[in-house]
Image 1 (cartoon, rainbow, N blue to C red):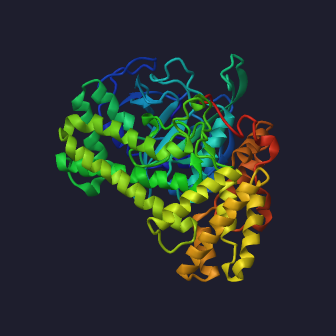
Image 2 (image 1 turned 90 degrees about the vertical axis):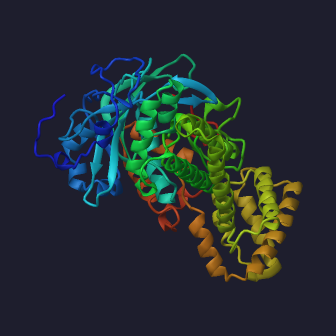
Length: 534
């Protein structure tokens, strides 16, 4: 692969590459599928793209990397971030990790279609790892081709940036670039693969280390490599905790539990369903990572999962995400136990997850409902009855909470008809008599509870609108952008990217993007459920 310096701005990026300098690597230099032992990574060059073409890029992520718009719109940008050229300082590698998939230990997994380009330190001394997804095979690709297609790449690109602007901890995305080649994918796993346009996403994060990065070494009884990775992670990503030691290991694990809980609270707040919460898809930094068969709740249903692979067991359904995150943390605790040998201390650290999640959930629900604070007991019943109502009425979660802020309690009893109209307008099915009675009873109790806080309507509305987005990346909107992009028109990708930069703001000319899911999208692939195929 050419690495010549052509005076591109990309050759001026400050690569540090501490990960490969300080951690054990695979001594085998050749890129072929294999089991890799006693190594955190293997060298793996991207497969050069035939004819790279820019679809879109994030100006905010570019700013973080000290890249100008001119640099991002250059031909060399496409070459580098489609995998056709390594810029100066880049060292391409794939990470080794294992994981539990759908509750079962899967052994070695690793970056099967992700290739890290190295770690950039920007002008503000912030460290970012650059990673190409869909740039070809690695030693961890197993039987797959290491490639990705345009539809999944657009979904990951848009959702990464949408989640960031929603205030959800997440990895980011710099760009999505067409490769100019066709990739075969069996989207429905029905034995009928189709050729689709290939694409590469450049993902950006402080680190892409996962729970499974530690699990693989414990599973293989490689405690030396485990300790090296734990010590590296603490020194690099958690330096405030101090020099690695058993007490610091415990404080670090407690912090991971806390960060994970905070992330899950945000998922529940905005109605995001990850779809494949395997331990290899859990970030050690508490970031949303690996946007595959994700989805957004439209009609409120705690049992909904967007992943067709999960359709029977519904392990990763919306309402089960908090429990799955805890289960995954238990698996991480088991992986760390050989370094700590204090089961009770690890159990105590796990309490940080439940305590952080419970407190965070209560504060989040108070904010969504415009309450000054969450009152245990009374408000637990209020929220429980609300979610029962929303599920029974098949109410659009995003629209409901956003429009609830507009109900003016100063109207007294006249506010009830306004609420019933809101319910009718935000539900996907007509309200029956039982649902209307549920709605009346809940609203009367909610109005009374809110009025006791004594907040002026303007203040209540502003507080609620800061917690409840008006715009999210609805499944059908992403699919519409994909449909157009597959015809060579990227305008809607850019439009959604711009819209989702300000998800809490009123955007007068974008009302169509804050509407219920249309009937045509209810069962269409990509708009309702997806497979893990990309």
